[in-house]
Image (cartoon, rainbow, N blue to C red; front, side):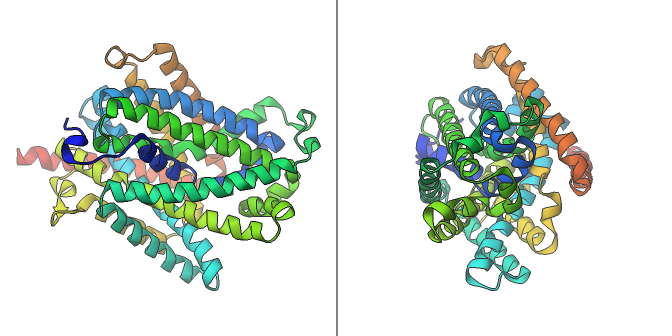
Length: 428
């Protein structure tokens, strides 16, 4: 493994962490509060704390693995180490490639809707134009290298966290304690079941593992970046949830949906609150699109190197443009223009939860090499499986299109893995 310093790439802990924060604090926080409030009421902040604990357990597993096995393939390298370079890793790689394109397209469409509402007529056609534009711009940024991505994410995260911090301080200073009274909380089982929704806001931390190739000392820096990103995200989510549910009733938050933050900001910040939340949404969704494309080159390059993907997917156009990045960006553009992605909004959660559980289960076989504590890994797997089951019964059951799409992608991933390996083996 050649480290980042040897190749002149010098991402620091803060830059790697901000790539993860940019992936986490995207459009999710705007859409989550209403949905989570329907289940957990004013106790959504507790749900975020519990989701942060589950993410922290997985973060411990990923940090230990990343410190021992830093690679361009990110957490797929952990699968290779835990389960070998066979069909499990191959199917997971194709699954991640496809879902990454879908999630990138979904976030880009979210950016497009905010941009269309801000500068155009808010129509669907303008939304698609802006979605394609932001994907193209973020792909170009990724072509310029991890340094450019990190600098852009630093700006995005500073703006987003800055505005959300102002929002949190303003609302917390004006909250009504009665709205957050424990006596009004639903039963604990409802709060626990809402973790399946709030955990969605933490899924992006896995992107940080793809920065290992660009870190000077990944064994030391990668764990710090993961813990820093999860810490920042948890504090922001809890503060925002307390602020929103401290100034609005649960019914108002649920009715407000994706505009809950703007509605909560207006009483304390006036009309400027809407403007602030619109700016935050644009920055957050652009940053999440950027972070969504970031793993593409490393994923395809590493998987092509070990034979899981065709060699062409790991090559470059000229000296700078990774084919894997181009394929992901083009796929995301097509999906953004051609499909109604709102019908499959939860697919990223299901895949990520499944991936996290499998990676950490494989880690149990490697704990002698990573020095990880077995009980923490078992707890990480158990809590993630509980969240996945809760997610299945509370969300996927109500979103048949997501369930069907997920099944189709799983089948397609298996077919692609088997087909490519048959061709590869036939070539000798």
